[in-house]
Image (cartoon, rainbow, N blue to C red; front, side, top):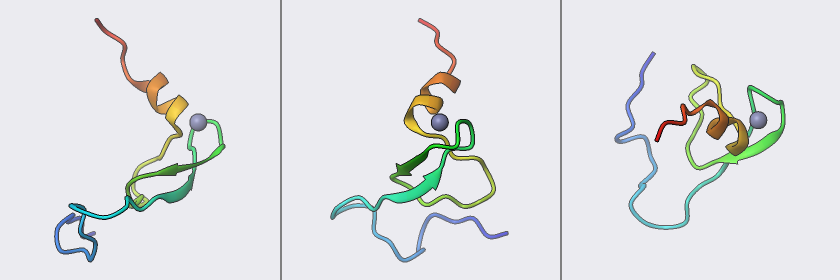
Length: 57
Ligand SMILES: [Zn+2]
């Protein structure tokens, strides 16, 4: 598999952020992410994403 963020065809520097509709791998909720899911790893909604982050202060 080819995984290269550069030269894909989308400038990330300017312009509106492209949102991609995905289904959260944790709760199954529909959500949008500012990156293109490559299909090789699960995508989570904001809630689940934060829940998965280890909370350490
Ligand atoms: Zn979720």
